[in-house]
Image (cartoon, rainbow, N blue to C red):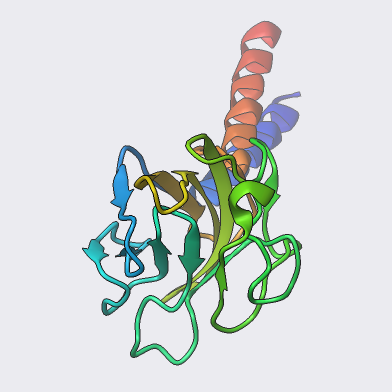
Length: 202
């Protein structure tokens, strides 16, 4: 019986250790305004640095016309885009999708390739002035990661807002709205169950 207990605890600790290698990088409460002009704002999604205009070194995404326009040509020196939003189709001008909470963003999501934009997501996907969620892939120094972003998008009559975003730095899929890695949650549950079983058997 003692051997079974030790094995159970060792398994739980291994699962917990493996899960801790992945973490969700979360940028809450950024509330970056999206200007109503054609240049808008560009954002570096790894540092949260934002710059007014449509170009900045290291920038990933460009939001303009209050959010009516979204582009990934945010760094004029880049030869390929680092940011690809989840779309309703694979065309580089297809609408950016408004995803429900709990939706999975990952390798199986729909993306375009190369540089592109979207100017048809209002009202096709997003309701003007109402917060929604977009998903994205992001090329980082450590590889491709997947994330979600909460935004309020408007036509060019009113400014929009980039509220917050998050991505899983392990490259695993992520659920829209999630700020806690699912494997870590599972590992903690296993660990708690192991401790509970030990106590009950004493």
